[in-house]
Image 1 (cartoon, rainbow, N blue to C red):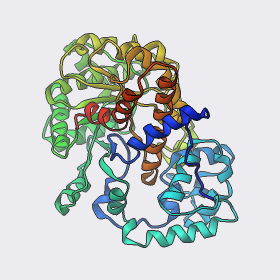
Image 2: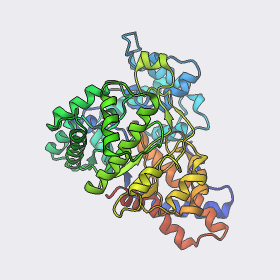
Image 3: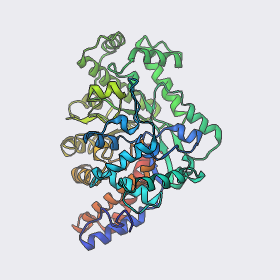
Image 4: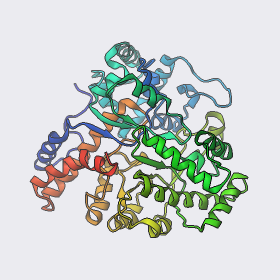
Amino acid sequence: MPLTDPDRLFPVDQRLRDMARAFYESVRDLPIISPHGHCDPRWFAENNRFPNPAELLVIPDHYLFRMLASQGVALSDLGIPRADGGDAQSDPRAIWHCFAAHYHLFRGTPSALWLDHTFEHLFGLEEVLSAETADAYYDHIDSCLQRDDFRPRALFEHFNVELLATTDAATDDLRWHQQMRDSGWSGRIITTYRPDAVIDPDFQGFAANVARLGEMTGEDTASWDGYLAAHRSRREYFKSFGATATDHGHASARTADLSRHEAEALFQKALKGGCTLQEADLFRGQMLTEMARMSLDDGLVMQIHPGSHRNHNEAILAWHGRDMGFDIPGRTDYVDELKPLLNAVGLEPGLQIILFTLDETAYGRELAPLAGVYPALRLGPPWWFFDSFEGIRKFREAVTETCGFYNTAGFNDDTRAFCSIPARHDVARRSDCAYLANLVGTGRLRESEAFEVARELTYNLAKQAYNL
């Protein structure tokens, strides 16, 4: 018996199910456009075999270990390194056994859909993962990983990925992208400019990061003008490696449009480590507006990912470092906080800003009305906690009547877990097709139009939104 239902996520009503299936069949095999994610470019540059099932499927995936942590499993037992020098499990089979023994915790979650899809369609497994099947799973997956057709580049091609974007820090030397280019491999992997570490005064080592930015560009980043010039230089360097977008993961959506004198004074205070929490937020907001102005010049699409209270637990941050699953959504204001930026450049032709949210209540109240009128704005797909069937359904229901389909940016998977990419895109395609079937069934969309929209949501809108 297969692990996954071939009609999963389609409506129960047979007429609507038949329509959803037909829409899905028309887009199922379209190439994957993955314009925003966090896969490691080193995988594809070196093209080494993935070491073992644990390092491929468990250790990179914070969706998995946050759920296990909620049930009392220590991150160190899952092989997550200790930043404080403490012991962590290093036996990959023991890590896999721990994961398998707790696999039932993922019942009903998107993670189970993604993993079962991967187990069945990539590795050909048909039994449910459990403590009893853990060794058989491990041995089978491990034997697959020894084969050349399971190396990163081969999987990239097997997954039918047309484009994959990585997300790299402003001070990254992009050596792995250079190595890919030098190798002559035809796979299209581009970079994305992520300047948080040199924009956020609260980021650890902010002043040192800014100094490093200056060293890399030959600009005087101790001055406001030199600091902005350094950003322009690095953005151009990233563009030379295919970048079409920037990405900004700020605590809030706050923007600002300060005078040059005010911005320079605030920058100097940030360099000296003297900003209050409010001043740090104001500086981040000013830099979003500065980045938007730079996008008018160089054409890079802006992505704004606000609203996560990152590294919520201080002990986990001390033990394991940043981005270990303890990130919690918070209330986010878009109408007032984006107003300075939108008043400054929101009507400028050629500017494209993709907005994401972790605050679902903002979709219908704020984000859809904003994207439904400002030509610079597009809505990104449900992100992080909401890239799921229910999240996608609620997103479409909340925004479509106000901003339509064509003010949205298609789908991106935003993942570090490489093997989950086709599974995530499959869930998005099925979810959208189910929604389109309901529109047709209730007389709000013609069936012929639904086939066209399915292709737009699956493929065309992402290419348009990211200038691909």
